[in-house]
Structures are given as structure tokens and as C-alpha cells.
Length: 610
Image (tube, rainbow, N blue to C red; front, top):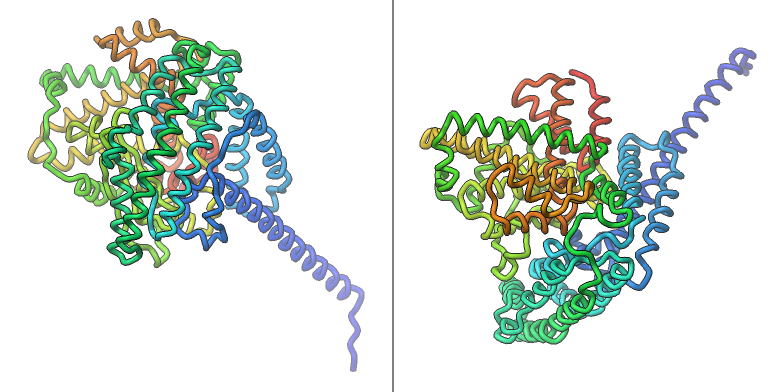
């Protein structure tokens, strides 16, 4: 016997069906939007990845997994007038990103959408001033960076060697593009000063020393041979093939790369005189506007110029007073500053990293794992003598995103002459600095299924601010190591830390004073002289570096202060209860960064007390 539904039963059934359809459509719509957005971010990532074969090789260990033919990648060559095209390209990307309904995205995708929107907005503001950037900066430009990248180019297979040699052959046309860009900068009245040009010209001459190349003693020849030896020892390369490849490398360096450096030097010599003498960005048309955009991009700070100045000034005053009180209470510290006493036990760089790795475990979370992780390995190398004048005190070589376990840290011997400097530098570059933060982020993203695009969005203020935070924290680890043998080290290392903070904070303030307020060299001399006796050549070096590298010091120290502001915000929210608080705070930063500090502050404000 059939049973017929009553009207009420039909109504309920229809309502349930309608609800089911609505829920199904909503789930489909939301999942569909997520899928589309994830495809967009993957395409964006792959485009960025393939833009430069050197960066690709550093970023990806196994190209086949990404369906990319590495041999087809070419160095990006600049062509006349291309600088203006960047604005259109970024606008197109921003429009595409804005088409996604964030309400239909998952929480993780919504967060990435916000990061990407902020990133593209900052990049667009920079692109509006196409000739203000300087790819040939004396301190961090392509002429000095390229040899290091070539020296560390991985040779996992004989095919990698062929890829490397193909890149050497592309360097002349790559440099020709840089020359065109510099010529356009000169036409726009934005070419570098003669003093900066002289430095780059000297680099081009010294970095590809013809005598070393002729004697086969150039570091690009020696490191090439060392990498070939590893392939030979693993049975992947015959000795006769290795000799032939060495010969080809030497030929290309002598007949292709060195002449390209010479041609670049000649082009810069011809352009000398077309730029202004060393001065800040404030002295150029729209220079202040460009500086504000660059400061936002480089530091990730959303504060106004006045707010940033106040934050830096308050920190400078507090640390200056603290150091003055410490020196008054401990007069012996002045003599110790002059002599740089060696208190730490004699340790290799690797032993220092091992000590730091073990010491941070109570306050910093262990690296995320998915059961397939390997042992973290790190190699510490010293910069070749010929590169010491042109490179940073130290730097960390970011490993491929699909193989993060082999890491390299470079140390510049010129800037790590005492034991505490080496110790804190390795904390900055290693644990709990760059190496630790990079591995944590990559492993966390892998574990949570986060798109690899996150690895290509560069947030300098977070990354360098974190490393500075790690460096300053490491003074406490040094004190703990020797508190029994050298109890007097506590005051001395505290004084060293305060001195370091005062110096970096002052230089960050000078960066704003020079580039936004238009301070001259004489103005800077007056400021520095009021804080102590400095030689004029030292003040000239400081001034020139800041002029040539706008926003570099704020990227480090303002980034650090922004992290400290987040720490205050977290303490007010969660309550500061020592190591447990620090552990939770570090988890928050590591799992949500790198990011701009406005986004992180908003995210933190949404958290609740346990």
C-alpha cells in the first residue's frame, strides 16, 4: 500500500531539499573559487620561478616535479623602454586578484589573498618610479652578487654543468640590457653619482682579474673544479670529461664573462657626470614619494614617516641612557670596549651553530615534521678574499624549496674579527635566525599544504627583522655559556648589545634623515659628531653607504622594532609568563610570517586569551 505525503510533509521535504541544494551549491561554489584561486597562485608562482634560470636553480631541486625544462630558461634581458611596462603588468595581476570573492575562499587562501594584495599594492607604488632603483649598487648590485651565485650554483648532475656553462654564455647580452637601463636612468637624470660609478667600475675590474684567470687561480675556476670533483667522486663524471669542462669554463670566463664586465665598466665610465653627486632621494623630483613607497616595500611597516621616526628615536634614547648608566656603574667596560676581550671558548662556526640550535629549544618551537624530514646540514664558508670589500658581513644562501636540508652560510672575515661578533653573526644567519626561520616556514607550509607562492613573496622587514631579533637574543646565550668562567661577561655583552642597537638605530634614523629630509653630508657629520668622536672618512663611508642603499638599515632595525611592537601587543593579550609566552609568540610569527606588519598586527588582534 502506497503512503502519500501530506502537504506539511511535502513542504518539509522541499525545504530540506532546498537546504541541501543551497549547501551543496555553496560548498561547490566555495571549493570552485578556492580551486580557481589556487590555480592563479600556482601560475603566478611558476611565472616568477622561471623568470631567471639562476634563481630557478636555487629555488628548485627537481625541475621534473614542476614539469619545467630548465635548459629552456634564459637570463632576463632588459630592452629599451621596458621599465614602464611593469606598472601595467602589476595592474593586470591586481585586477585578476581582485576578481576573487574572498568570502568564498578558505581561511588559508583568504590570508594569502590579503598578503598578495598588499604585496602587489606595494610593488605597484614602487613601479610608478621606474628609474629610481639601482641594480648596479656598489654594495649589493649584480656585478658583486653574480659571482657568488655562480660560485654556489649546484652541480648535482653533468647536465647541471651544461646549464651553468650556458648561463655564462648569456652574461654579455644580460649586461647589455643593464647598460641600456643605466642609459635610460641617465636620460631621466637619475644616474648614480660619480663616486658610486667609480666603485662599480673598480668592482668590474677587480672581480674578473685577468691575471688570476690566466693563471687559473680565479675563485670561479677553483670552485668550478671543486664541484666537478664531487661529480667525479660519485661516479657521475669521467676524468676526461671533467678536464674538458674545466677547459670550457676557463675559456668562457676569459673570453665571454670578463669582456662583458669590461664593457659594463666602459659604459659606466661614459655615463659618469650625468648623475648628481652623492645625495639622498629627497633631492630628486618625486624622490620623497619614491622613498615612502620603497620604505613600505622594504620594511613591511605601515606606519607614517613621523611615526617611524618617533619609534626609532624613542628606542635610541632608551638604549643610550641604558648604556650610559651601565658604563657609569662599571667603569672597566670602557677599557674592555677598546680591547675586545675574548671570553668565549674557542669554537668552530659549526660548533657555535650546534650550541645555538640546542640552546633555543625552550623558547623556540622545533621544526615541523611530516615523517619524511632529513637531518639539517649546514656548511659555513668564508667569502673569497677578492669579494670581501663588496659583500655583507655574512649571508645565508636560501636552499631549494623542495630540498631544504643542505644549507650554506657565508662569513666575511673582515667583519667578524672577534669571538662575540662571530657568535652573534651565526645566530643572525643560522639559529634562530635565517636558517631556522626559513626551514620552519618551508616545513610548516609543506605540512599545511600552503602554496609555494609564499616562498616568492619577499618581506624584507620581517625576514631581516627576525634575524636581527635572533642576533640580539643571542647575547643572552653567550652569557649563559660562560657565566661560570667569566661572570663579568654579563655586563660586557649587555653593553655590546646596547652599542649594536644604538648604532643600527642611529643609521636607520639617518636613512630617513638623508632620503626623506634631504640631510647633507655636513648635516650627518654634525649629528654623528654630537654622539662621539668619529673620523671624517668613517662618517663619509657611513653617509655614502646609506645614500647608495636606501632603506637597508630600516629593513633590519625597523623590522626588529616592529617585531618588538608585536611582542608588546601579544603580551597585553596573552599575558607575559616567560618562556611559555615567548614560545607561543615565536610560533605565531613563524606560522603567519613572513608578512607585512600591518597584516600580522591585525591577525594578532583577532586572537583571544586562552
